Each structure stands twice: as structure tokens, then as C-alpha cells.
Length: 67
Image 1 (cartoon, rainbow, N blue to C red):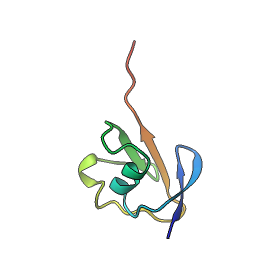
Image 2 (image 1 turned 120 degrees about the vertical axis):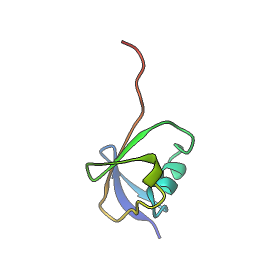
Image 3 (image 1 turned 135 degrees about the horizontal axis):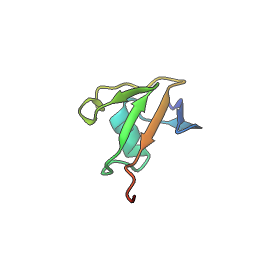
């Protein structure tokens, strides 16, 4: 069963049930990213226990380089 989530402002369907699996499904498994679920920061150490639900808003932010 897939759930409907909003990822960085775009609707998407995911098979993942937690944030860690969602990042893997989206191709961010080995990436250094910051995550927020429903406008709440989620540390990397809590991604496996952070469950996803229909209608959640997920933000995935990659660090920027330059100056």
C-alpha cells in the first residue's frame, strides 16, 4: 500500500512506512541531508522510528557549498 505525502512541495506516493525507508526509496540513502516532517526537524538517528502517514509534509534539504 502506498501513502500520499508532499515532498519538498510536490505530491508523491511512497511505499515506505518510515522516514529512513522513504529516503532510501527516493535515492537519498547515502546522502548527507537534513529532514523535516510536518515542519519538525528529524535527526538522522530518529529516521527509522519516524513513521509516515497520508498527508505528511516531508522536506529534504541537501547542504549547499559556495559563498
